[in-house]
Image (cartoon, rainbow, N blue to C red):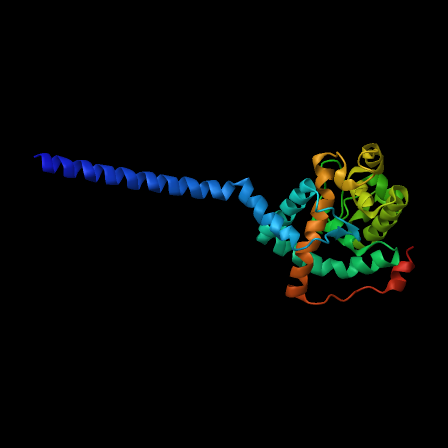
Amino acid sequence: MIKNHLITCSVICVLFIISRLFVFSVDHKEELKSSPVLFNVFENKKVEEKPNLNFADEKVPVKNVKVKRKISYSIWKHSRYTSQAKQLQAQAAKWFPMIVPILQVYGIPEDFKYIPLLESGFQKHVRSPRGAAGIWQFMPGTARQYGLKVGHGKDERLNNRKATIAACKYIKDLYDEMGSWTLAAAAYNAGSPRMHKAINRKNGGNYFFMHLNRETGMYVYKLVAMKEVMDKEIEENYGPMMANIVPADTLSLN
C-alpha cells in the first residue's frame, strides 16, 4: 500500500516537473521573439557591417546609439515586409530610369530618387487627406509655384515626368536654403520653416540630432533604409537599368 502510494506520488512529481519545463520553454521562446535586447543585438550587428551609411554622401552618424537604433529598425522594417518590397522594387525598376537622368540634369544627388518611392510607391493617383497628389505628392500651391498646372480639369502633378522636373527645382531651392541635402530631404517632408525652427546650437543643424515630429524624424532614415535594401534587390532581380529619356528633352522643359 505504501509502495503504491510512493509510486503514485513519484509519477505526479515527474508530470509536474515536465509541465513546468514545457511552460518555461514556451514562455522563454515568446520572450525571445519580442525581446528588445535580442532585436538590438541582431540589428546593431547588421549596421556595423555597413559603417558608411549615408544620404547624398552625407554620413549617418551610426556611432550614436539612438541613431544606430533608429536606422537599424528602419532597415529591418523595409527588408521585413517582402510582399510590399517586391512591389516597390518592380515600380522602382520601371521609374528610376526616367527619374535619375532628370535628377542628374538638375544636379540633384541620385539618392533623391527614393522620395517618390517613399511618398507614393510610384502610384500617381494616390492623394493625401491634405490634398497632395502625384508620385512626388505635391500640394497644389507648391505645384503651381514650380510650374505645374493644377485646376480647371487639369492636374500636371499626375504627369510623372513634369512632376519630377518640378520636384528637382523645388529640391534645389531647399538645398540652397538649408545648405544640406539631408536637411533638404527632411524639408521636403516638413517644409523649410519647420526645419529652420528645429535648428539650434545643440544639434548644430544636423538632422540626426534634431527634435522633430515622428514622421519627419524618421523620414531620412526611411530613405537611407530604402537605399540600402532596394538597390541590391533591383540589381539582382532586374539587372542594369538604362535611361529611357533623352537629356535634351529634359533641358527643353527647364
